[in-house]
Figure 1 (cartoon, rainbow, N blue to C red):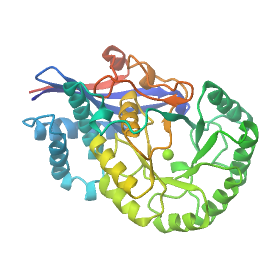
Figure 2: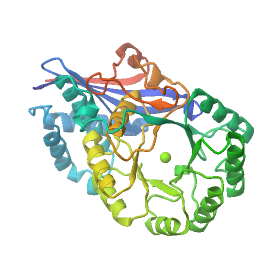
Figure 3: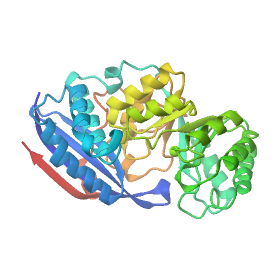
Figure 4: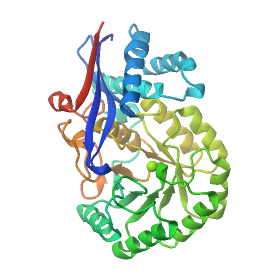
Amino acid sequence: MKFKKIDTYILEYPEPNDFSTHRFTLLLRIETEEGIVGWGEGIAMWPEACKAAEILIREGLFPLLKEENPLDIEKCWQMMRKHIWWYGYNNSGLVNFAISAMDIALWDIKGKQLQQPLYSLLGGKVTDRLPANASMHVNQPTIAETIRDIEGYLSQGFQSVKLGFAKKGLSKVGKLNPDYDVNFIKELRTAIGEQPDIMVDIGNGIRWDVATAVKTTRRMEEYNIRWIEEPLYPTDIKGYQTLKAQTQTLIGSGEREWSVDNYQTLLLQDCTDIFGIDPARVQGITAYKKIKDMVSINHRYVNAHAWSTAITSAASLHCSLASDNSLVFELKPIPGPVQYDIVREPIVQDHGWVSIGEAPGLGIEMIEKELLKITIAHQSVTL
Ligand SMILES: [Mg+2]
């Protein structure tokens, strides 16, 4: 098999799950001489980062691989990693969005060539379905309105909810003080009862010190939260170790790591229970599988970070179904353009579960006419 053509698309789209903020991402379409098309994504997020990652694909990685067989994915992945040593120390930095897009597209091509769904290529499904989690940003002005939204998602079938704190919008959650946040969790638990899991995602918007993280997590434990995510800055390893020693809740981290190498370091620190992995950031599906295996043999969980387009969701879902250590699958609960408009069949939950069919590769069919409506830059290179 031979490469023939690549197309890159920088998207700008309103995200209803993020207070209708305009977000950006980078998509890649690779076509082979045999006419097989694979799609990939790098979640570069800011317009300038999307432009930089796009150039790295078009002027760096594609020329590097153009004589290779697209089916030799491991070789292509290793070649890309070897090439980037001058771009950023220890496999960090923007180029990982570019590698991710290339790698995901290669897996899509391989699945289509072999007429196999991606999960089959990853060793097959370990589970047929995962519980659907409504992964939302808390942005309603009041706690009562937020609880009403969450009750709506649960009534649609979602089995749990992950709450992004300190996000855009009018909510005071994560912006006022820990007392307000703890009271929110208390009121939510009272409203929805004991059953649905509540995950708390502190994320980038909050800078708690270690004492506050320990104290607030312990107070939230009274309301049975399933896990707490990124309550401290990701590099505060000593802080995480203290938090882990002084609390009884699962701790999530890792979604901001760039590559396999960083996850190994994180595992060795023994302070993370649930490793967030974004295939459109960590050097693709090849890296996801390596990280998932490493985390699995160390008896910890992985959780796909799939908060972008249907391409990343599809890649994440195949990886998650082929994993023995995923607890849930996160979906954005409000339908938006990059999940619903640009593919023929969106990935949705059904009676609280998420699964995927037997279509080859990623199993999604892109609608390029719809894609172009939200494309702000389109480049094409033919060999
Ligand atoms: Mg998160």
